[in-house]
Length: 99
Image (cartoon, one colour):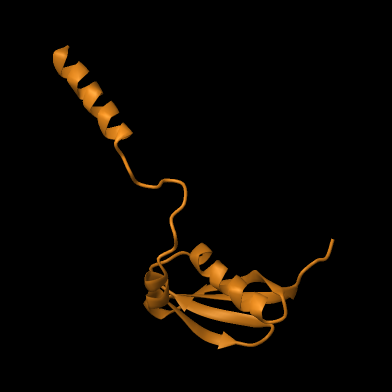
């Protein structure tokens, strides 16, 4: 019984002293830059090739690209698999709806 109480107390103390940020961490830009490359681009679309990351990590970069090309929004058009387990994601730059 004493061992169980000691383990529970240790768990509570370790949980209270945890200093990691759990809600949001800044993206690791160096890691993203090492894993993403631009394959094709135009004012209307951009295609990225990436590996070892997810497409939702590529999307903010596409959003910035489209924003700089006429205040447009990036919309995921297609994702394809290439050789070597790389993927290519094409984002279309579309005009924003004004409500």
